[in-house]
Image (cartoon, rainbow, N blue to C red):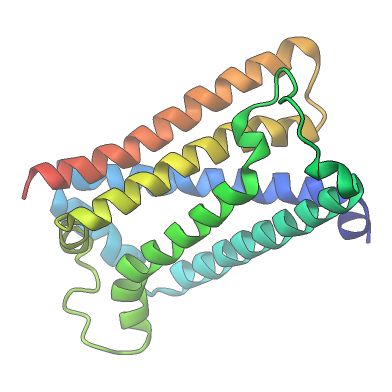
Length: 219
């Protein structure tokens, strides 16, 4: 199949899944920002989602996107290293215009994956999972409680900040790289897409950081 048998096809899969995950992060942020202004409204959103079929289906689809993105990331990295052969050990100056993030996407991806596991433990496990297995759901829909519980721990605050910084580097490169893969890379618009990706990603990550520090400040 073209999407898995060719380098371009694999890059297309990476790009499509990456853009889909960015759209999810946008939705996730819009939901989380509600918690800053009204904890009760945020809890209503959590209760609406809960373990209902549409939330479960959405979670499964999201997990599939993340797994595919990660698998293809490793696949492309292995392919690129094999193509370079022993040349990858040569000491060379960084080419002009090559961003730091583009040379460290795998490392950034590993940090992001570890942060995702932590995030799932702190929130998904205590909320949707508890409801799915039929445990006491008193706190399952109380998302504001779990935000407070998590970010009252300074260790978690530090880990989440590191995670979000890594995510910023990953997305600023990944966003415009996906656009380039789609072929929208003429000289004028490529520079514009680079700026758009940095601005959009900065707003996105700043929003998540705002939620963290808003709850740190209220303790």
